[in-house]
Length: 148
Image (cartoon, rainbow, N blue to C red):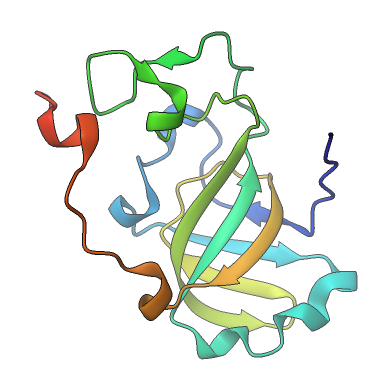
């Protein structure tokens, strides 16, 4: 089975190189804009009622996955790609939870940019704490890593 994703918009940030991007949106207070294409603008109705949203996007500049073992940015050991948030993946899909600042027609202004300028936007979902916050017992390699 194969899936074809058609971008619903494009993400604009000040980051032009992968090395410039923060590690995870929760560690960023950089502003960005999600430009939703006009044919999808009606789907934004009511989005301004949420303080945070998920942006799902494509890692359009990442190298294709060459190994299923990767070294994440916050550790010095190899881990399975599915146990990390490393950008080189079998399906180069990324997501970020960002703070929605404002909606201006088809533009969503947000804080928490951790993606490159020109990133293709696939989908947007509201962040709802009652659905999205879990009490965590284990944090895998992240909990036992030596790097801060």
